[in-house]
Structure formats: C-alpha cells, structure tokens
Image (cartoon, rainbow, N blue to C red; front, side, top):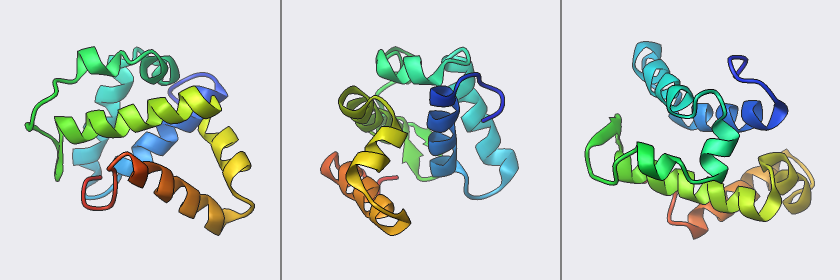
Length: 121
C-alpha cells in the first residue's frame, strides 16, 4: 500500500491486496505486485478507466490459488462500478454504513450483487 501515492490508490490497493492475502506470502505478494506493475503505480485510474480489461485475459487460467483470471476481472469490474457510483471505497462505506459491522454487510451485499462472494473470491 505504501508503494503507491495518493489516498485513493492506497485505499484501493489495500482493499485488493486484502482480498488476495491468504496463504503463503511468497505466493500472494507476486500477484499484488503484478497488479501494481500493470497499473504502473496508479491502481485507482487503472481500475476506474477499465485498463485491467486489456491487461488481464478473460479466461479460466489460474490467477491466484482458487481465483481465475475471469474471477479477478469480475472482482475488478465490481470495484469499477463502485468507484463510478461512489468515487471511492471510503465514500461507499460512509454512505452505506454506520459502523464496522454494517460496513462489512454493505460491502458484502454490494459485491454479492455482482456475483462476487466467498465462493468466487
């Protein structure tokens, strides 16, 4: 998170990284680094402008452990929709929740509406 500049980049990278951060560090760190490299350090604009679509092939090849490239694309597409509507993840949380528990419920519901759940990501 500290390898990118700006609050929007840090917030978004932290959220994406937290979704991939399980298992051995040696396995998930390269996947997070791959996203930073593809985004050239500007993860927020990479997602907002949909550049991830050109950089990650839409196929069933493994991206990381249980996640395929298609799964990651679906996840990033949902994040893009969230950004388009709320501008930042922080704005979403502030508008859709009042405490930590309701924030988790709001995030879970939002991503579930896009077909992203604990069995897909």
